[in-house]
Length: 298
Image (tube, rainbow, N blue to C red; front, side, top):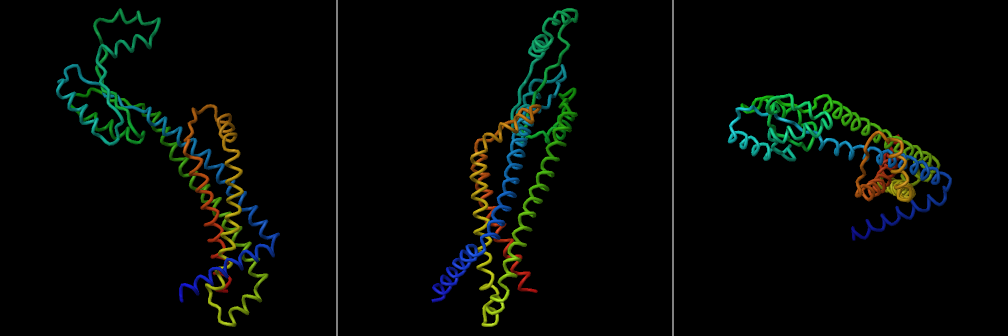
C-alpha cells in the first residue's frame, strides 16, 4: 500500500512538472537555453583541457633519467641496479648503454663533424643506464636515489625541462578545476533563480497546499523534477551540438596550438557526452532543490 502511494505521488510530481513546463514556455525556454550554453562552454573547455593533458602525458613518458656509470663499476652491481630499477613502480623501462654504443650515438649526432673524435684517444664516454619514467614528477626523486649508488658517477634528467613541464601540468589542473567549478556554479545559479521566479508565480498555490496539510517534500518534488527535466533537455541539446562539432573543434584546437604536438584520446567523446548528460540533470535538480528549500524556509 505504501509503495502504491509513493508511486502515485511520484507520478503526480512528474505530471505537475511537465504541466508547469508547458504553461511557462518562456521561462522553460530560457532555462534550457542558458543551461545548454553553460554546458556547451564547459564541454568545449574540457575538450581543450583533455587534449592538452593527453599531450602532456605523452611528453612525460619521454622524460628519462640517465645514470652515468663509473668505468670501474662491477658488472654484477650494474645488473643488480638495473633489475632494481625495472621493479620500480615509477619506471617504464631501463636500457643499458655501453661505452661503444654511446660513442656510436655521439658520432651519429655529430654527423660530418664526427671526424673530430679521431683526435681523442680511446673512448672517453661512460656507460650508462637510461631510465624511462611513467611520470615526469618521479624524476627528481629517482635522480637523488641513483646519485647515492656506488656504481653511479653522475645523474642527468634535464631538470629545467622537467620543472617547466610540471609547472605547466599543475597550472592546467588548477586552472581547469577553477573554470569547471565556475561554469557549474553559473549554471546552478541560473537554475536557482529561474525556479525561484516560477515558485513566486505559484506562491498562492503553494500556500494553499501547505494549508491543507501538504508536506515540504510534496511541494518540492514537482519543482525538482521540473529542474531535472529542463536540465535534461539542455544537456541533450549540448550533447547533440558537441557530437556534431567534435571533429571540427579538434581541428580548430590543433590549428590554434600549432606549437604543441597535440594528441587526442579516441575514447574521450563518449565519456564527455555522458558527463554532460549527467551534469545537466544534476545541475537542474540541485538548483531547483536549493531554490525550493530557501523558498519554503522563508
